[in-house]
Length: 227
Image (tube, rainbow, N blue to C red; front, side, top):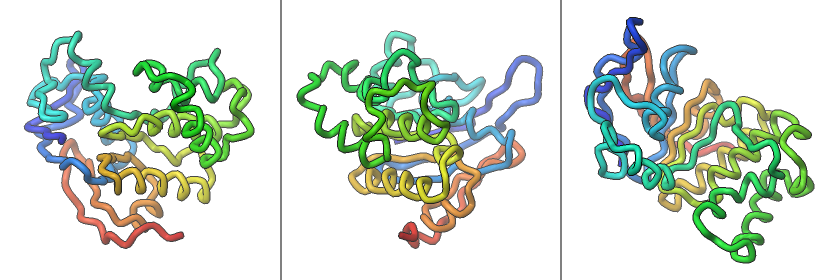
């Protein structure tokens, strides 16, 4: 699914953020991405969802070497990836419902075909009473839930999430992680960058840990999330 070989990222003349990152993330797996602030978690996610190119090394996503993929060929790869951004990136003039269903409309689906599923998902994340609301009227936690719903609604092959529980209360954080866990059980590959030790300890999936420009694998306990 994702293969990184001797990846390095460097901005200008500054010191490299990464040094020879090599890892394989199998299809259908669930990994947490951990590390201190500034370790490069967000940068690694940007590489994987093709928002950034490596300075050195090769990166393969869905069996395609995307390290030097032409710009015209990148959207086809991106359409298979659901991204949960730390800063939400909701579109200001679209309602919650319109923001969440945007990936389906871009893919050419008709509104009658997805309305029921979209409404059910928005009810599940606690936004059923805010379908017509604009993003600026929502709290940070509500915007985060909308962003998560948008990322998962099209059942992408891969979900990458940057601190998806950072703006919600602990109970909702666990609920959202249940959603990602259930999607993973249906075959979706999930990679979650998080500082939340409670989440990774209880869910028990392996961690890719970044420190000092290197990455190591820490096996999880696979206990399952406390309910």
